[in-house]
Length: 588
Image 1 (cartoon, rainbow, N blue to C red):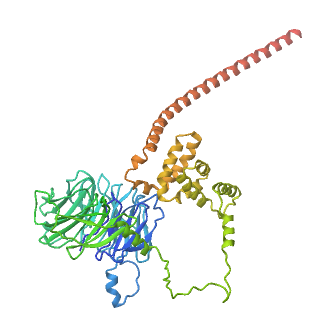
Image 2: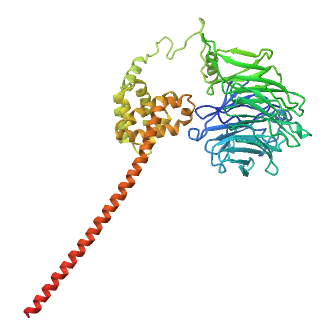
Image 3: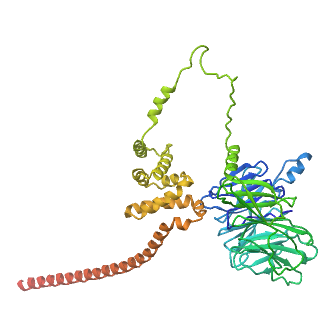
């Protein structure tokens, strides 16, 4: 059986379903979970988590067949289908929670939260029991019970964040990794072995063999960030397993790994590795002992377009099939991937596949989204129009045009209407302000009309700003940030208003902005401006403290002077009264 696990937390999550490889689950830049059917190559399900913009999905892992909960009695003909049917899907989030999604129900199954205080980097299912393991930036591993929906056990794994997990095929051992790889006994939750050899965070762990009768035949693979070597480790009974036994050469760090596990170390291992640069490397090797030199791939597969100057098409994931010469590939982009089964000639060291990705995407979109059927009209077809036979149907074009003239308003009229509606709006009454603001904002950004942008940016209502930014399409997000950056450099009053807009953009579209390859270059002006203001803020804070101390001293000194003056006045008044009493006695 091919090893299947959670995808790497460094890139966007993308993983095939186990066994049949019928589904491909991935999360794109917009934070939505999409499940594609690899057989008919269409979108099967789409799920939008409630916090998909503020707490993006960081990792995905397919679970085994669902066993918990009451189930109706199945027929004999359905027994085999239910046994091979995948159901639950675990999604780790940046908020520290784990979402369990049911593909059978097409809805949220449950949410596991309350145990992690950091980003969930990896999730792994137990192969037999209804258990799930998650690792986080808080350096802890949590064992979840899917029947109760609560944490069953939690323990500290290391001083560094837990970046990868893998459960052994027999369900008795657990691999965890940060900078150091640890093998845990799941029954006692104690460290069984430690492995060191990666200088960066380990992002990939896979068992290459099941646990045989002799412990010397247990192998697993590991890959790390910014590391072009995939290491193979052997778990020996004598404990002499401090160094890796085999290394595989790659062109970039591994993002997706698939291989076939076996009970015997004498069988050949087929390994498919998709790297960060979008290339696929195929390896064939016998795990029969140490090898000093790193092994080169048996075959390298790369995708390109059909343009005059071919552009590389990145591979997202690859899955091995029962036929060793056949592969299931997913390539293109995460929003609209292309899935294809191909046969690769491993006799060639380098294979370049040419595909017209744009045509494939357009065809897929038509079959997936469009449900409108166009009738086939030929010479024998008759068109039936409303009205009595022999009479011409009334023409409504003029009336429709008159009505349209009344609804077609200029930008200034629409802005004026929005202002009037905002003044007369009743609390709780439905309003189209947000839609109008979003449309006008996009029009203003495209036309660079200062009047439209000024009208939109003058609003002070935080809820209106938040909803408007949420309705802005993704291609307009970056121009909106650039316009906000330009206006923040102007008048202080305008800068205060722009801070509200910038806050709303970062809360709503963080996942999209983080996916941009040259984000630092595009947002360099905003970054430097924020950095300079942060530095100035410290100076202003110190100046504020000094002024506060000075004003406090001034107040105290003035208060003391007032007290002294009041005392003097009291003394003088007392003396004056004494003199008056003395003069009265002398007169008597």
